[in-house]
Amino acid sequence: MILSLSAKNKLGFVDGSITPPAYSNWHRANSMVMSWILNSLTKTIADSVLFLPIAFEIWNDLHQRFEQPDGTLLYKTQQQLFSPSQVTDDFSTYFTKLTKKWDELRIVQVIPLCTCTVAASIQKFFEDQRIIQMLMELNDSYKIDRGQILMMKPLPSLSLPTC
Image (tube, rainbow, N blue to C red; front, top):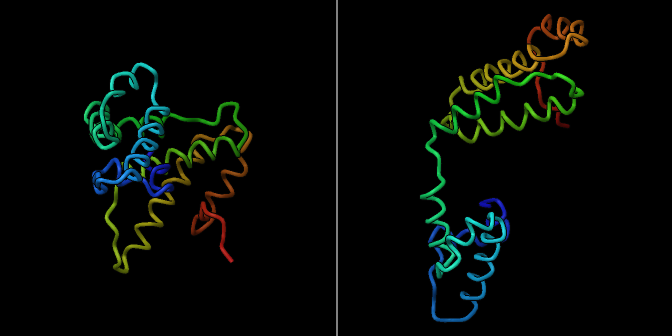
């Protein structure tokens, strides 16, 4: 929801940074944001916030009810991340699922930005961990490929090279 509102330059309606002035454009935009939020909810939840007058109040109500503490999100994300295996997925589907979980973990477990010379080494460490995790869960049909990748020094990058 935040991504959609931000893309439409309407995030200020839910974070409170855009307040209601006395002109109709604000009310029209607020109604539009409210409808986006309400349409993204289940009927039961939407009914419970339907009569709140502004998008900011709907957002705060939902945030108070449904926000999960970082520890809960971190646990859930890592549990899902460390339990997948390729099973019957083709490699592309398996890799896409892992990448999605790694991205979720990056959002939940924020690592402070570092501009020191060690930053690149830390980034490489985390990438190597992802490669190892991915290789551990591959089907046995990739046994030879896994061995060849593990013999590489340094381990290859997960991202595609840029030109």
